[in-house]
Amino acid sequence: MKVTVLGAAKEVGRSAFLVNADHTNILMDYGVLLKREPLFPMHVKPKDINSIIITHAHLDHSGFAPSLFLSESTDVQPLATLPTFELTRLLIEDMIKISGFYLPFEYLDLMTMIKRSKTLQYRDPYMVNDVSVTLHESGHVLGGSTVVLEHNRKRIFYTGDINTRGSKLLRPADLDFGEIDLMITESTYSQTEQTPREQSERDLLEFAYEVIERGGTLFIPAFSVERAQEIACVLKTYEFPHKIVMDGMALKANEIMIRHPTFLKDPEIFKKAIGEAEWISGWSRRKKVVKEPCAIISPAGMLVGGSAVFYLQEIAKSEKNGIALVSYQGEGTPGRALLENRTTTFEGKVRKCLADVKRFEFSGHNSRTELFEILDQVKGNPKVLTVHGDGKSCVRFAEEIKEKYGYDAKAPDAGEVIEI
Image (tube, rainbow, N blue to C red; front, top):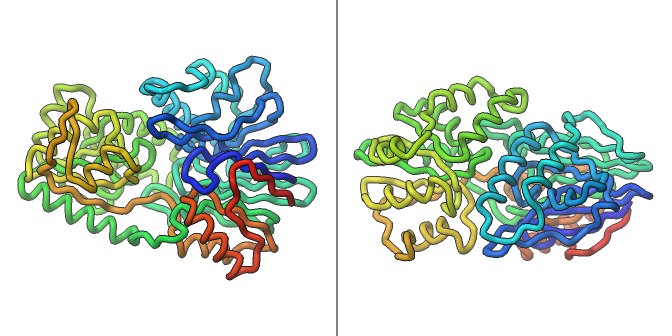
């Protein structure tokens, strides 16, 4: 088997890996890197592709997949879990709707992809010609998967985005992937130890109580898929007694997620957290609730759009209020400016944020220790590719793997081909 790295090479974004096994070609992910101008993975010809596996719905893994379906003559078969397809559709529809930039596909192409989709179950092998495809639970987002491909007794394990800790929402990743010949691993936090999850949860609760007990409103901008629901579950698990409000695209994600209870760690906690929260459906209520002592959870996580923009402008006006940043804040985003400079920009004017701003780590990715714990369980003597991290993290992680385990490990460049 051969793997061509099409994206996520020494960067976070546009994940894409092309696996060739004799005359079968399988794509693992085909994402975008959203900046001012979106960046796409290296091009492949749809007529040469048999299947695309979408590990999970986040746009950096799924966002460019509709480009494979521009022609009715293409025979590409999309593979993923059912929640992944439903959440992918939600996120890509939103990207198409709000994009002020060029996308080489449109809504009809997304619909073609969904119509041709084949839903897979965890641990249930599926044959693409003579290549076996098996998805395992990744613990990263609802329906998210790691991938094992097998052909002629050669086996590839691709982590996608992985979380072996689990969360209030999701079970830990399933690491029973057997002996492997090639491992493609994310490197996002390979050089970083994140704050332990329970500590982050307690710190967030403490901040929430501080803000509301002084008569303020707490605003929690959060990614619409998984992070918003995770925060709601955290507040409910700790029996937070004050009103919890949810808004924006997180509400559509709620509806999808509640339809798939078997993918949740504790469906009852989830139903209770989501069911007891107030769902905001219009501007009249939105304008009132922002002045009430409550916790408001709303996308976008980096404050780049959605109802979060309104909440930010209103919450920022009073020092009684608080803003809890629980999502990654990318460079150049309003969230990063708020975090670093305590400023907001509205109608071209930069304003000082009077509200108390704090950041809490709730990443869905493994930390350094946990990535090495996965490697400790690896069977065989595999080649290892370190991807989905900044350049220094990928390179250093590969060096450390080589030093500690003796594996042939490297941080590949885009376009590089690895053979096993």
